[in-house]
Image (cartoon, rainbow, N blue to C red):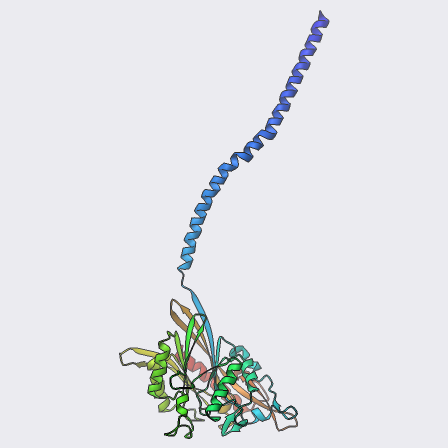
Length: 415
């Protein structure tokens, strides 16, 4: 009996152990697979719904932010560089003529000022022609070889003012060839035209800023201004009717700023004439913002002027009476002709309003004698860079010091 009970008890214990093991195995199977399956196929559905709602909220926020950004006023910028008289004469041509090739081989004369000449719009006044219908000439009549275009283009110039005293030295044919030669190297022109119906002014759109440029000349040779002369039909003369005609044309093209170059004044004079002042007022009254004077070959002061127009409105503008020379070989009045002013204009347009910052950098045309030869090497330098040079005459250095002081003083009055 005891044996039977012992066997039955052992069987029951083994059975309980087996049932417990089976339950444990089943439980492990359920825990390992069923909850995972539930998480994969059920719980993510709830999370996806939450993310979708989140995305909607985020999208709404982003849309709201986008609208705010669009309402912010855009800002546009443009830079301008303006230089005075350029003409190739005297040793500036003679020193660079290669007799063997019978060509002009210029060095990089403007290398030291390229940091200021390069801008969105770089303008110079060209007191010469470039034409093959007359010989290359450096005195009386001015006609430069085509190689000078490499010098000008290398400095970044892209607009030439041609309303000068010498633009008809090659007659009308010379004018047309000069324009075509400049256009070949992508330098546009202002101040001249081919017919009475045309305008001599141009509008240049730079980064959504519309810049109008006009150019006038007071001086032409008597040969070109005779009673029966037709030369004046091809150039904008500096008179009230022509000023009004060209400036009204530019204003009609919705210019943000208007610049006018003027060929005026008494040559080799540092003093501003009464006539210059009167024409400056006329230009500002008609809507010019910046007047750039040339032709005197000497530097004259600059200032801000205010003038009342016929409607009683006050017009304001800045007048540079003369920038002097930028590149030439001239020493008529010692040492004034070897200096010039350059003007940089940084424009910002925001909400259709223009703000401008003006910088002025005086330059010096350095001419150094070549060793064992009666020729010269030319290089344009910033005036401030000659103050400590030992190869520049003391009189030039003294003039540069005084000029730098004057420019600083004049700038305070126009800013």
